[in-house]
Length: 237
Image 1 (tube, rainbow, N blue to C red):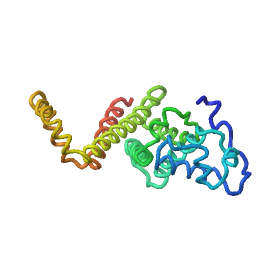
Image 2 (cartoon, helix red, strand yellow):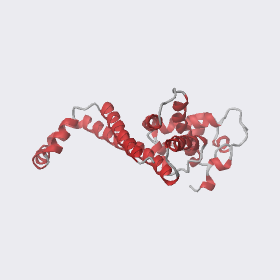
Image 3 (cartoon, rainbow, N blue to C red):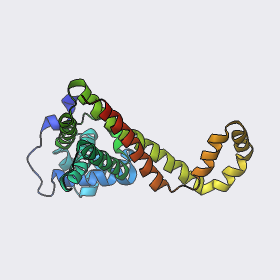
Image 4 (cartoon, rainbow, N blue to C red):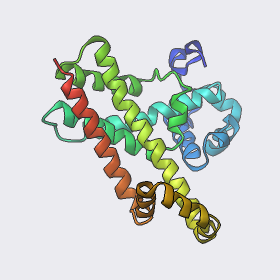
């Protein structure tokens, strides 16, 4: 999608149907995306969920991409709400940790968001406000110019990468839970080869079977974030 086609450049049209508001449209859209993913989303599906004809919906949004833009900005607003409702933080590291933790939680609540971030222009008010909040924290800490941009990108990249890894781990664990005994029997000889060739790796793989995924994913996220913040702090002037 080019930015010329963005819903944010189109502007919100005045209400024509009293039954419809942008908030209602976005709410139904997010519900479909959370439950079934982007593949299930269509203008007709959203109109049906709102109890109106597709023609009534087209007055407010003209494409599925517009629905995605609106939904993406709405869930980014969840991160902002978490910042506004929390007490003040004592330093820039704590402030960035709050943004990172809130973003991770939002990504986990809405699994479709990560893929959508790569295809949407992110010009909505919540996206802009969230980016500006991160830049303000980093600027106050002492980052400037290109380093300011790179520091914020590093935080965002860590969050996105950690969530991708967490979702993958959960997916594998779910499949293993369904047919774990069969898989272990089939892979028995190969696992023995791994233990012989890579004993340290085999030991860690064996230990992972006893891990609480929720707790370990949170711990790894915080560990990586702390390492990243340490590195950023070392680069301050």
